[in-house]
Image 1 (tube, rainbow, N blue to C red):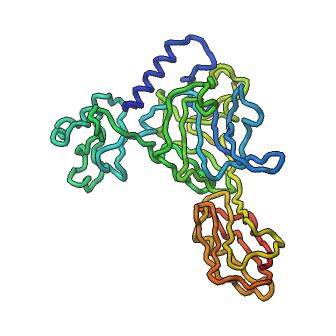
Image 2 (image 1 turned 30 degrees about the vertical axis):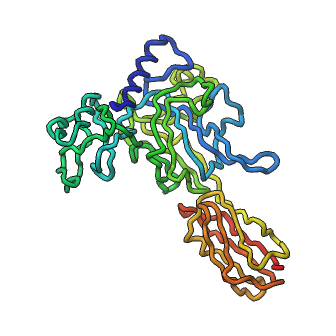
Length: 391
């Protein structure tokens, strides 16, 4: 890519080529299609004492320094605070992964792709002052041109909007991950991606550095879902746009099981079965943890519950506020509904406020049905029913 990111890519290629002439653990593998070596993501882990805590593991592929706890298929990926590191066995062309920021919207946003073959001089020509822009920025390598049929404000389609270059160094000030280039698909759900937090990192190899550990392996795509959230209780995989390629024009693929633990050279040399068809990334899948809601302070059979104090609950995923209207609290005998309002102090916390105090010394049933869902519409695996008696 011909932004400052693209210059880094060129330097990495030159360095790798100059420093080694034999296969080693640090080599990238430019032969064949670009293959996903490893995928790191966060899972919800339950220890021997039954405590649940997050940890980041190899959900795909392996590493000689990893333990059995560090690498395994993931069946309970964390639904919140999630990010994925997709480690590649070679460099990809950054033009299809990132865009540079323009001075105003050029299509559906203010970011535009850099044409293949563009140079830093081409970027500089489209970074000049507005009065000189039309004369300077043009041709097949120009960037930040208006792509809208109706024009971009006062700028006609095909005319330059200009690269955002506040510091006037002749280069783009900001980049953004390209929408639709790499995605997460869970069943029929296309998970929205946080384009500001996701990025392509063209540096790194299979050596584990002192700083960053396994999460500094590279080159890698760091993919962050919007709100760091995934839909619950569903299997997911990756998607790559057809134009995400290596320098030989090959599409990304995922070999069976990813990089093997005993692989100490380039992936292609490790095993004959370490092959995949360009464009096929179906070998990598993971499953997200089910939605779980834990009611606090009110347990099954509890006695002496305050008639006016709110009831709190915590969820393992961001909740749909509209779905919380399905929660019911009613007398166990007679089914008289309590008067209450449900709010979300935070996306994963429920607060039930009683607008009228409950009746004293009375048995109630709290029901959180399967129609209470996360923000993707994925519901509880089973209803939660709690019987309690007021003070």
